[in-house]
Image (tube, rainbow, N blue to C red):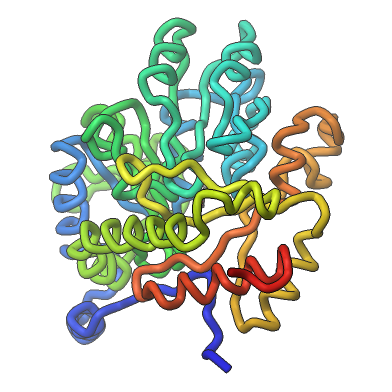
Length: 376
Ligand SMILES: *Cc1c(COP(=O)(O)O)cnc(C)c1O
């Protein structure tokens, strides 16, 4: 029997482990020089834009909403198919989440439905780039301009993804990334926010650490209510080591995605009734390789049967609007039918940097076996 193949696994190289050891031995283990170095490297990658790091991706979105002045009485449009964090931050600032259904092909928010959901109270939209696939960025920003909306891009999964050759994050409004353990590059936990100017960046620093600003050599002032969201130098040292590999990681994931398509063959969808993701090697960083199962097999049954082949399968995500917290706010079954079907049947196959083509082949064989009996 082959060893267990998880759906995701981080790869931390020896140089990074040594760098973390150095930080731990240095006497300064919280936010310090490594955080500044990591922010500088990220800013260069994002075309010189302002970047600040945090201890999660979630808090970056909450902070962006606060900087934009969004709160009670304001509506924010987002997708039901994301990690629940995306909608929770809207509630966290006292605003009202409004969901727009997804596109069945990209599984991202449907921009036509975004436009249809806009009201006089709409202040912002939070698109999510599921599996690292961007939405149509030209259309997104055309809508934002037309209706005077702020955009908080939930690019948690999209580091290394591009649009027309430009990295996601190097243009646009607020762009939020996560460095949680399963993401393409990790700091174990962490995130960063790309901002528009120094004024926003100073606000981000305040919200990040108790609202404190320093004045003079020993003076501090507090003028906004901030929290405790700073990244540590330990985490930043991991991030620097990971960032150095970003291009290699993206290239390897694209290669694995190609191999999935090649191995499954052109008639896979017809043969099985399952739906593959759009075949995109240009923009997508292939954070996930997601398949929507045919209705004749339930997701728990599929996951159980894949486990018999010693293959781990993840699922991303259950529709947010059907969680109790959201049902209590008036959302019910039937409101977003595409999201509900995708949310019921979507699975994430193994996809990570240290995987090889034999792992892809093993996964495809197992999946074909589970879906249709013995594969060819
Ligand atoms: C990972 C993720 C988040 C949250 O990031 P954390 O760093 O875990 O707070 C939010 N949205 C999406 C789409 C994610 O994948």
